[in-house]
Image (cartoon, rainbow, N blue to C red):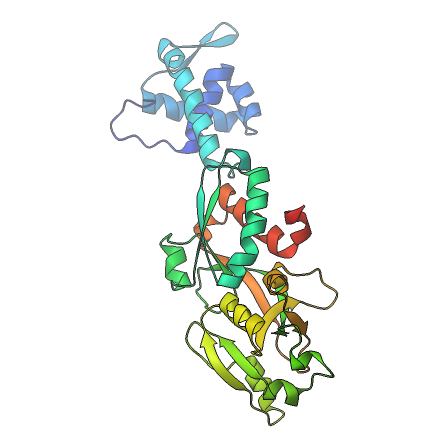
Length: 316
């Protein structure tokens, strides 16, 4: 230990001053090293002498030499200051190649299906020791993020928790998806024709209505929702096998294609522009602030961002 008197109080600055004095053997040089005045360093030395009950440095001609106690303390003082520097320095960047982690992400099935290929490709390239657990939207995100059951929530972030950090990733629009040869693929798609078709709604809470119904109501129109499913992928599969219309998120005009539309293409669905003004869908990610500066979590967030916002890079 650096102290021997009962219950001494040594702050970090005094420990740093001790290391400088024991290294430089000079009040003047120690002061210059720490960018302070010789008078202030002399006061530090006097305080250290009282606490340690040892003169530490004594004059020998034109120089000062350490006492045996000072010589014994020097290596420990250097170690303490080094530890303080590590403790108080910003978090070091993480080498993804050295990560051995499993990240738990909560997302809707369509978002999870769109994310998984890009996440895996980037992980194989950059962080082969990382694996992902993608959970359905089964937890209330705020408490689940707080207690560590999930590391990241991705999707349409509609909850407001003061402590939750949210980063918006991409804005999308909703389009109508139908099977090849569906009657809506012929001729001009009007609000009336869209409303007259048979629809599937996607809702974990079993809701039959949404923004499309609000937009149709402004035209005195009402659509028929024949079935409500909790899964976007199930709704798209149903649309591919019947005359049911489902809604699919797609990139805004002029933007790069969104990976959230890939599964609709794989099922052979035709995407039709909806002739109504619908609000955009914002996909974001939410996390607990304790992870903000963590290097591994920063890599996770960056990887999600590259997968959803720059899919060509993720798949290259």
